[in-house]
Length: 367
Image (cartoon, rainbow, N blue to C red; front, top):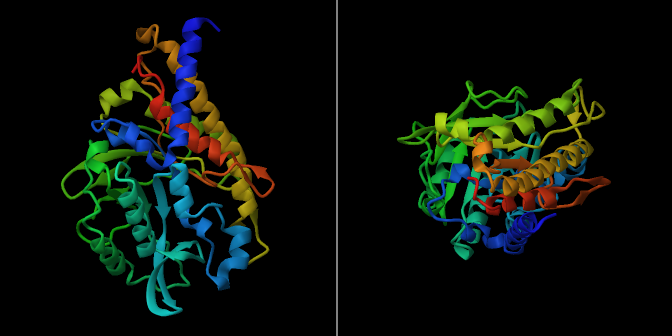
């Protein structure tokens, strides 16, 4: 390795080390005028499963519904800044009615309001940071969700001072200390943050079928990769190809010129195993989430780290690589965020979080 490459490579490693060492405040190292849509943001899929489940659900949920090992506070501490929350109405328990966070049929120990309070405290302690919430109504035929919209709007209204209205060109400086809430289900005529429509679960990632993100005034585009069922034939190769395709699009200078301020959500999450032992329908397994993460988290971390080396090498002749804009991952939603190992699997959640954060600080000479 010659002196030039050695210097650039060491700079990249140092940048990743700085970001990892200050995970509580890594956004403090990002310029205020950076568009949020051009950031690399680590996120957690079904974020609250790491908090555990209510007693009546905990035994079975541990086997088939756990996608995280860390709670929200621990995820925050390792650098996660995007959280997938799935509230629904729960009747019973100590209070007549709560908006509990679920994964499928299983109630976690967290309420929707409780997560927002936790994030409020985290932002107060770390005002340079922000958080993105991607939420949806976790419907079930076994629950009466008729009050979901009313209750979701009420909880969000209590935190309206914290929630910023969406616009596609929001900058880091505008969002610091605040929440951006993007809901895949509507709870009123106007969103508190944004509504997302056209969410895709296909591995065929296309730029002509983007999802729409709508704030109170402004609208934007969102390219989503959320293919999650790897049990079907060819599922894993299709997933890996979809992850890479989404990463390439998020790094494409040409796409940014044609579709400026496009947002990206790239899921490594999904499941590789299912079972029919617990009911009439096949359901995912926690081991299936782990086995999937062991493949997909490692795959994306490898891609990001390889791109960082290529970005450094492109610095000498940016014109030869005009189609690429450096490594921008968008929002990466992963299982087992922040942990190296879960059960018997090397899930690489710590490595992927660090790689995503570190990609914000690679040399930018070619960008």
